[in-house]
Image 1 (cartoon, helix red, strand yellow):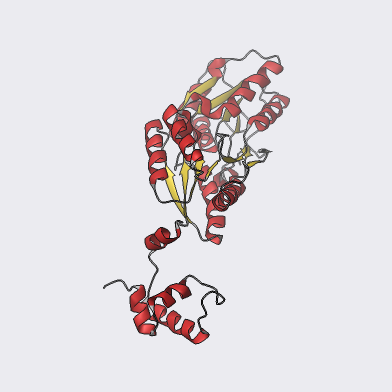
Image 2 (cartoon, rainbow, N blue to C red):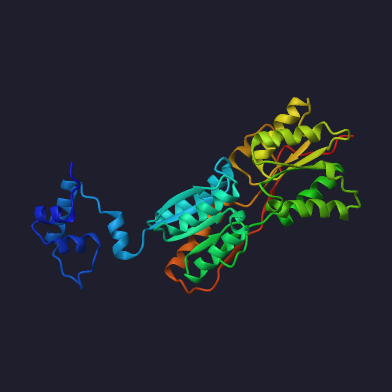
Amino acid sequence: MKRPTQLDVAKRAGVSRSTVSFVLNGVPNDRVPISLATKQRVLKAIADLGYEPDARAQALRSGATKTIAFVITDIRNPHYADYVIGIEEIAVENGYHLLISNTDLNDEGSLINFRDLTRQRIDGLILASSFILESSEANALLNQLVKRKFPIVELSGWYGVDGALSDYQDATSEVMKYLLDLGHRRIGMVYGVSAHEHAKDRLLPYLDSQHKAGLVVDHSLLVECGPTIEDGYQAAARLLHHPARPTAIIAVNDLLAIGVYRAAADAGLQIPKDLSVVGYDNIPMSNYMVPRLTTVSKDAVNLGKKAFELLLTRIQKPDYPLQRYTVPAKLIIRDSTGEAPE
């Protein structure tokens, strides 16, 4: 069937096409007086015909698409779903649609996605994948967008654009103090990132805390790997077959911690009796693992909400001063950590 147009609605309601447009756009009566009876006829005609406004045509007329994009690092990680929940809840309340783009931890693909998205008809962009901005090409593109006053909010670092951020540096120092106070002296780390720099807010306090405690850092207890559960499993298996295995393992996110749990079970170890485990991000399933996972939370849902609020302010006020919102991460102690075994 042919899609009904505004002209079809006008003919059915017995009014002009401009009247239909005024009703659809809610033009105030003090600008264009339209009687209540006429409005009702137009609305009935719209309902009878099943008319839906053409979003593309509306965007061309208004210059706004009511669509924003959210770029994430790894769609397999539930941590990013929490951001989406927060962003979408506020976006829908404000009449915006959310487009999600996954970079899949691929630098070249990330740059292509970043470039393509900025060529789309979108009103703004939220980034939760810092490595997009770590190449000279991406930085040059970002600078062009800033000059154009294109609305962007970052969730992973400060890049000269608005940002909603919570890093794990102070919380990791707290994690290390907590584990050291429990008597742990051999603390391993499963460092599953796409590039060495991406979790420095966990790596640097991990190393620094050992130095401050007077410990000799054993770099063989720091295992770099990929970002999947299987990668976490393989990295943990290496640690647990170490001649002097760690009594605690920190995984740089909860997804990797799931792999650590499986490796511990396969090695015949009990958590936390034989091995303490700490994760990051507080994904929903972390509270349902057996035992419940000790983790660190950024409150990604709240950060997602705040990111959209910052973006909306930038969309509405392009010359608004640079916005920076920070919130401290929080250590959540559950059942996967305990005193170091003798």
